[in-house]
Image 1 (tube, one colour):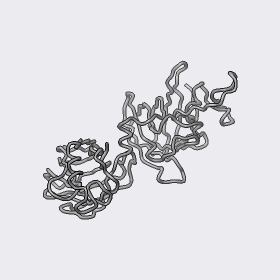
Image 2: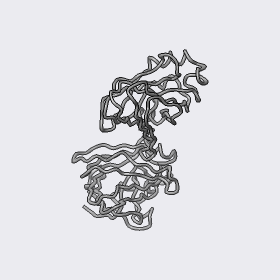
Image 3: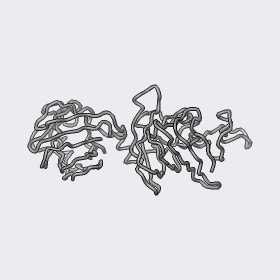
Image 4: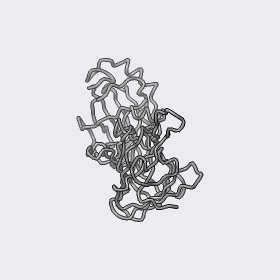
Length: 336
């Protein structure tokens, strides 16, 4: 093993050349690029490296074995506000989805900022959950920046405030989106503003959270046990291929969600019962058989320009409630 200060590899980013002869190089060494010696295994130019001059309270150890195709690092936090910066990408990555395998001694909540001058490029990342076995982790950086992954891309990654956390990372790379991820990235997320409310004693919107796939922001509702609803406006054109209701929730008692595309009659979609859960639980409800009829029945309103059109008045209802405990929702919207 070799202590390397703060050199680390994130995403596949090979550097290509227009070759004029068989003797021309196909990639640069670390020293060629950065003008100083660095970790050089023969594969490092295919990955981002960490900027050794921009780091705080972290130690990294290279665990990569000779003749191995895997790139493995151990990261130890040594104090509060542990973070590191990457050097700029030497070429475009293979995709904008961050993915890797990891082990970690205890659960931590990392964060990332892609552009130090743009606060919108910062987000809290999903937890790295404590595990002695290899776990797979993915996060779509393209949701924070449409240009991230291009030549010159870099980032600051934070690991929290606790010293003594040991994180082992294997094969950290950038990949393209799966079909499901592409649909989620193109999803329509509802925005609730408290336009009109009935039998909901309290609600709030939190913007301090994960921004991936519309998980940001998080809403809290405290519905009653009666006819509990909140009206909202459609903010993006909905077509009939947006036929899956998706969201994550936490709640101490069971409930159902009902959506009115237009506030009239019984033309709604209603989820199965969402059981109580103290951890975030994902729901995907396919209502493809219902959507075409609703769209065809209400092309011109009422209470707006028409079903699925921007500005149409819609409604969120809660059903099946047995108490008045809060319900937390995030990533609430429609996907294909």
